[in-house]
Image 1 (cartoon, rainbow, N blue to C red):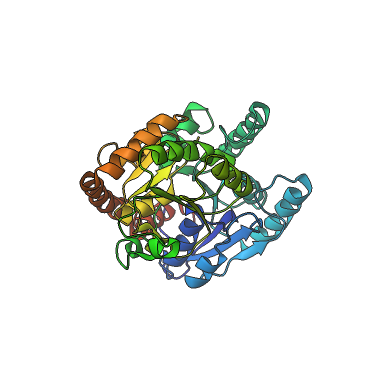
Image 2 (tube, helix red, strand yellow):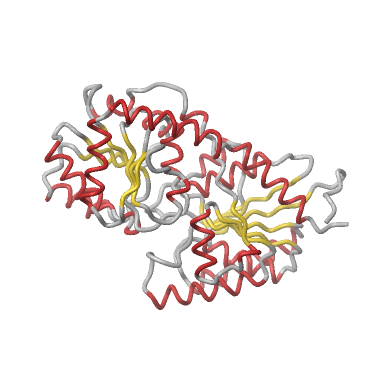
Length: 390
């Protein structure tokens, strides 16, 4: 396949369901901004962000990216809205006539690829930032989603997975053939996490500088299994009463989690922070980052914490092992095991020298493997390879 003509940039349309707080939103914004403008022209299309989720539209604006927003497209399943989004998106693609359509996340991956097929786009790419084929819905709904993914995979030029675990899951579930999927890790703006002030989070919480501090950052939703983290925190508190937990994020389960914190007698040591834009400063104050999920793609909060020099303790699910290297950048524990999670947290909190060593190693690895320039270079090479123009 010939590289793009230097006189006519490759037209890329990038589609994501919503710019909510998380790695996929950063990923698409940084790609839209970072690809060489003399070689690629990118249009970013996204849906609306539900009120229960943090909105990262500000991040796009800060990076000079102006997305096209389809009000009919969002995370929720709605037949009428989804059909309206499909019609609107198909018309838009027929007008833009892109050389490549690249979709991200499950909803945009389905609607976007169907629209690209209807609009006869020559190259269709989809990135799996994770998947919703296990752990999110009931068995029958998962079977439907799996069938839809297999259908879309038939006309997808190439699928990308952000980690080996995600790729292996998709191949094992016969969603994508092994030869039609590649691993392309996330790329993030990490340098800001590696430098800057510390003490911001403890100052916000009114805590002494030597307070053992655990962090969590993400949505407060069922798949994150935060009751497990609170159970582990209760065990940590029993052994190390001075330890605190900062929950950075928000979501549909906040009220229920606040009730659980009160029931466990942890109201003085568990802090609900809501969504924050200064996570680069907050993370640098942590002793350890914790994750208790039942499933994950590539957990961005753990990458960013590592870039800040903070080790992680996480359940060993999905693509987590791509980020947390056991005994090198943190520790992995079995899912749904509060005792193991608590013990791993206590181990690092009681041994700050070891925690600092793991944090330094995490920082070196995250900056080297998940930087934005590596992503931009890899994606530009892939687009050149697939471009079908003469």
